[in-house]
Image (cartoon, rainbow, N blue to C red):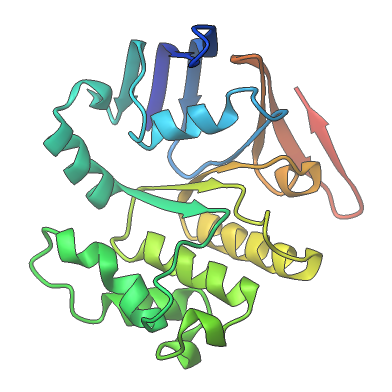
Length: 234
């Protein structure tokens, strides 16, 4: 589904210092995988997610999505691709405070090229267990419920790939576990997920754990689950 070939991304600080956020990054992600990206602050993990989401352009390399080098599409083509193929979940929920849950979820449909969008917002909220909260505003919802609304918004266009950047970072332990349960359910239903997290406990819920160090992939390990324990093997 996804193949990165020699992806590089460099920034220049106001001081003039060069920052190599990604260096010669090569990565394959198959359809239906659940991949966690971990690393210290500033390691490049969020830059990697932004490149995957076409929110940032690489300076070198290829980003193939189902065989198409999407990094070379025009800005308009990339916007259409993001809306149709990608869903985003962030640490901050980014909900419109004065609008209902269903109105927040339906926002991406404004730009959809679908012939029919009727019922998609309700369907997405039902998928995250909030069918009884569709008219509630964010202030009337808990943090965990607000993140569920954000996930429903990411799902409303039925994207091929769900990208999540520290989605449990603003939640208590119980709510964070519930959100990870939801990600697992979505993945089991066939959704491909790439999740950035600093929490090894959350990373252990994925199929693969990719560790980024100083802009490079330092490890790519598969998580093996067992009834009584869980270990990570190369």
